[in-house]
Amino acid sequence: MHGELGPGEALTLRGIGKTYDVSMTPARESVRRLVAEGALFLSSSGRVSTPELSNERIEELATLRAMLEPELATRALPRAHFALIERLETINNGVSQMVARHDASGYIRMNLEFHRTLYLRAQAPAMLAMTETVWLQLGPTMRALYGRLNRKEPPYHHRLILAALKAGDEPGLRLAVRTDATQGLRMLKG
Amino acid sequence: MHGELGPGEALTLRGIGKTYDVSMTPARESVRRLVAEGALFLSSSGRVSTPELSNERIEELATLRAMLEPELATRALPRAHFALIERLETINNGVSQMVARHDASGYIRMNLEFHRTLYLRAQAPAMLAMTETVWLQLGPTMRALYGRLNRKEPPYHHRLILAALKAGDEPGLRLAVRTDATQGLRMLKG
DNA sequence: ATGATGCCTTTGTGATCACATCAAGCGGAC
DNA sequence: GTCCGCTTGATGTGATCACAAAGGCATCAT
Image 1 (cartoon, helix red, strand yellow):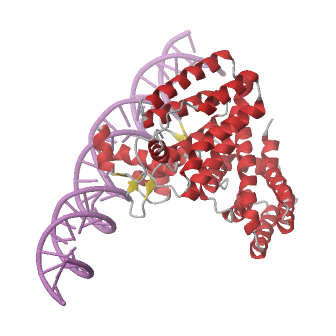
Image 2: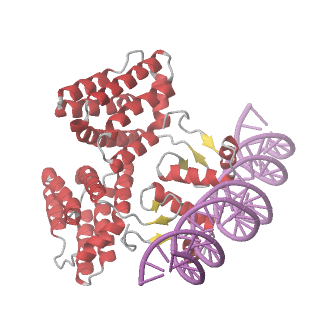
Image 3: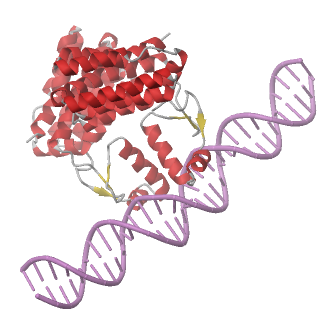
């Protein structure tokens, strides 16, 4: 999810087991779970690797983010008090730090933590789980994206989200969230 | 998914293995996958059972269906030629038969096949997979629902969907799909 | 130099086992 | 009669093993 692995990287059960000092059995269970969630690709011969997403697949996942995340933000809006907004601003500073030190994986992690912190207020665990599944599928691809364009600007859309939260502006919030979720992926196409 | 198991039914790895004549290992992998997809509930002690969904959870899943399925239908609409509509009508007759013979599980199966056949035309595998994950989570609950109210009328909203498909009416299609997906679940609340 | 072919290492699969833990049922005490 | 505690059977977990298949590499022929 955090882009620690790039697209198309191969994994072996014995290798995973050795990394985490367990036997093949728990490694297999974890891998099968991640395959079920679409986070890993299982070849016909049983080999596992991180997925290499086609442009069509990326577009689909971007659409899913564009559908799910504004809904979560809307549900979180009436519960977003000052303490939460303050926490989001703190996380947002963390995002800026990661941008400054060119830490792609850290950037993704902080960026998703920003979104998750907001969405947790929506009190919608099934919807949040589904959203995180999408993030999981996009992890390796997002690494490739943010590694390619080494952005220097701090997150602009996050400020729009925070402003809309403070103003209680639901349409503005939905638009800001939707744009933030899809802007990066759009650059990956083509 | 098809409601062959009711909510809260317990399963054991050894029992599953015996049923399908395999050892515990494949049974465990399957169970873990279904748990990852939310189709089965894993207690803190490791026991597995079908989930008993709270009203809040049902509302969430209904909202997810209401967001995902109209989008899939919209994407399928331009590709929905006569042969597809004919096939949908055939499936719809099957739904009516299941209603007539009071076969709850068969009704759910045919109903979902109707939707899946349409959505396959959307050429959106990730979105369809996510939708089927929602169906999977709702399976046992839908059994309880359709078992409770023994409906006699054939599927009304399906006819609306077919009419909208024939007319190329996108707004009508979206509304019909959304209504069909959420109508049953709404009765379960309270 | 390039392509095919054969072997060998690596890898996933399913089964089985020992062990810790949990749940339910039985029995006894008040 | 009811409630508590213990015991026993059942269950999940993680490890290991035998096996089959797949992939990679070296060798050889053209």
